[in-house]
Length: 184
Image 1 (tube, rainbow, N blue to C red):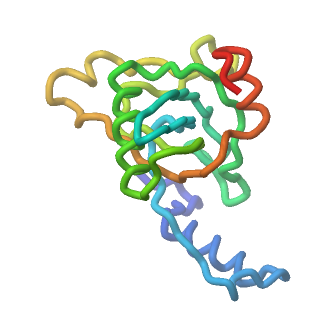
Image 2: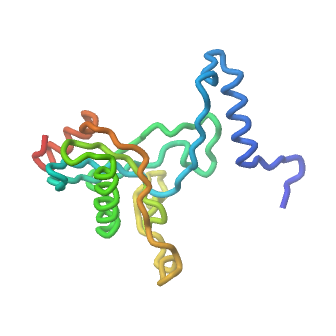
């Protein structure tokens, strides 16, 4: 149904408007090229690994709360800057296990068998989502309605790896890890 006088904005129209803004920008960054990535839905997480001889000595998974650009009503002015991180994750154990196995396989394929790695990703088709649980605007990672996850109703969750950093997390993350686990 179309409202009178209101033009529906499509994803393609938003993409074209964003590219036009880049082209018209005084900094002229478009000369460096434009990279367009597919948006992957699902809870974002950080996974901090310590590897020795290909074995996982330590793994910490933290939840990254949605950013402004994740919202249904996001505009071109909204961005994907991180907001809040919570440790330890509220993802269920099977999804943490998927993170452990998927990212450790990716690290091995990249040739890494020892070191400290700060990885970022999203859990696609997760059984969890962010919701305002108290009606006050505060988000929490909660389970989807059970009816959505009846046998065969929704595909199995899967890890989408966004990036691998060959370093520990930033100072905010390292302090939390030190105080929580005694790992520095």
